[in-house]
Each structure stands twice: as structure tokens, then as C-alpha cells.
Image (cartoon, rainbow, N blue to C red):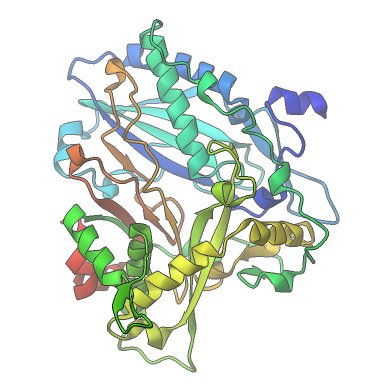
Length: 470
């Protein structure tokens, strides 16, 4: 056992309790780089292969694969062992109609990136399919190249991916310029794999499922993909300009009356405001003008990075999946009323603040007592694409800042995903655009086609968000 752990750079446990509860699928993203028309594919491929080799040395867990654990007490448990992927997949699409300048002129439309072409893995594995932790595919087109990345979400979250890409970019830069000051591996924290803090909690935590209603233990073992995963979606990217972001935050900031009868704003973040707008708008276009029984509650869950929440905090580059969810509930009728945006933004802010070290410890204790991981899902998954929504934000990931070296195109010009989205029903705030690319936020939304058309005509949504595709 020890030698296996050492081969992957890991200690024990190799997969923490918190990670056992994370989504069992590949998250896929795409990174777009412009090149001169006479670029040499073989040169770029060679640099990438050498850069990947060094990155696998710096982060050996990337070469692992997920395997099931034979555990009668907790079916569905996973382990990571050697035997994943250590090659660069390459696809030459230069004879296709794809042209980088056209892609850029059209703001890299998501509809271009079909599910099968640009990544080495699907979103979800077929039964018995090998599950590598990480896979990289270089796609060459006229005037540029597109890097398709797949990572297994149970082992890595977006923060870990940002670390991996930073290290890969630095290693590729070092291949091009051996005298460069870039030393990727030496810039990692010394304790990035210590998973004990996300695996054990104190005896004061009861570990009861009832302690965490933001998760659901399904009454039966699923026999197929969840219903929402089979719904065909229209996924689009919307741009929120810097000016619109400022206006949105102002509109979403609650104002309270103080003891002196003065009115003062309460703080919410720009991310809170965007999350509230997504939640509000999805419920409006789904339920406005329709009749529904009783008073249904809408659940909005926002992924929260647990690294800075722990006590003491985990290293910022802790290499694993440290996610939990900030969970919010509101009656549909409360969402549909005018002016609900500030109420929702404040609720999201308060729910994020409730994700503390004791909360995560309590969740870890509960996960240790889950009878079957296959039946343990976030609450929003029960009616995702109906009255519930789940969101994640990559807005703070510095993916546009990484310098990959001149031969590879310098800096990435756009982050994209498959035209079906990263995950069916997941609403995503993409990395904040640098000023050179127009600034502001891009938001990736996936809805049933008829609901998407309603969203694009919703006046509140349209006030702030502009579709990148006509």
C-alpha cells in the first residue's frame, strides 16, 4: 500500500472522506491559443510532451486512475492507484473548416465545440471504462491550437486544475527557455497532498444524515444516470461587461435601516450578485405565468472552496477536491416578485459564510457514516433544471495570466467547454476576462431550448447579460 501511495506522491488516505462525496465525472474545459499561420505542429507537440512529463513529476497524482473499493460497509467508495494516462493526445483538425481567426471574431462560440472531438474522455464513463485522473489533448486548427483538458472531479476541483495548468504552463516555458527562472515544481507548497484534515473530525460531531439536509440519501440505488443528465440542453455563454457588473452589484446590494434611521448598504460580492441573478432568472423563466401546486421551495447550491475555510487553512494549492456547498432555499413565489435580487444575493452571501471549519468537520463525520456513496447526492440534484439550481464560479482562477511561451501562443485567449456544458445543468461563471479581452465576466448557462429562449428575452437578465452568439 505504501509503495502505491509513494508512486502517486500521496500519503494516507489517498482519497479523503470529503472527496468521496464529490461528483464522479470528468470535468472538461478548453483553452484557446492563437498561432502564426506557419506554425509547426511537431514543435508544439514536442514542447507539450516535455512539459507534461515534468508536470507529472511535479504532480504525480495526475498519472493515477480511479478504481472502486470493495467495501460492504460503504459501497461506492473510490480509490486512486497508478495506471492512469501519461500521454498527450493529439488531433490534427487543420483540414477542417475550423479557423482560429473566425473563432475569435465570433467570440469563441460554444456551439463549435462538440462533445466528441476536442477531449480524450466523455463526461461520464461507460461501465467498466478506465477512469484516468487527468487527460490532455492538443487540437490543431488553422491559425491556432486548442488544449482540451479532462480531470476527474472526485480527485480534483477547479482550484486544483488551475494549479495543474499553472505548473504545466511554467514547465512548457522552461522547455522553450531552459535558462528561464520558471521552476514549476519548486513553487508548490510542501504539504499539498495532506488529506487528513478533510478526512477526520472530532468526536463532538454526531455524523447523522439529518445534520446535513443539504444532501439527500436516495431511497434506492440509481440504475442509470440521474434524470437531469438525460435532458437535452441548449448551452450558451453570456457576457457581463464591467459596467454591467458594477450596475448588477449595486442592484443586488441590500440596503438596511440602522438604529439612527440611516440607510446603509450590506456587503455582497460580485460573485454573489451574479449567482443571485442566475438563480432568480432561471426560476422566473421556468415558473412565471405557470400554475404550481402548494408552495414549492427552490434550492440553490453554490460550490464553495473549503481551503481557506479550514482551521488552520489548507494551502491554497492543496491538490484535491475541497468543495462543499452553500445551500439556499426560497419559495418560488418569493423569487418571482420584483426586487428579489438583493434578498437572494444576501442569502447567498450568508450561506457562504456558514461554510466554516466546524461545518466541514460535521459534514466529514456524516460522510463517514453514509451507507452507500452512490445514493448520497447534493439536495439540488433532486430537481435540477426544475426548481433547483447548482452553480460554480471559476471567476478568480488566473487562467488568462499563465504564460505558455511564444511557441505555444503565449497566453490563453479564451476558456471554453463542450457545447453541452461542463456538466448537465451546472451553471458556471467562467474566469474573469482580462481587460485586453474586454473585461467583465462570462457566464455559461445550460437550459432546455425553449427555456433558453425565454431567458434571452427576460428583461432583467437581458439588462446585464448579452449572449455571445447571435
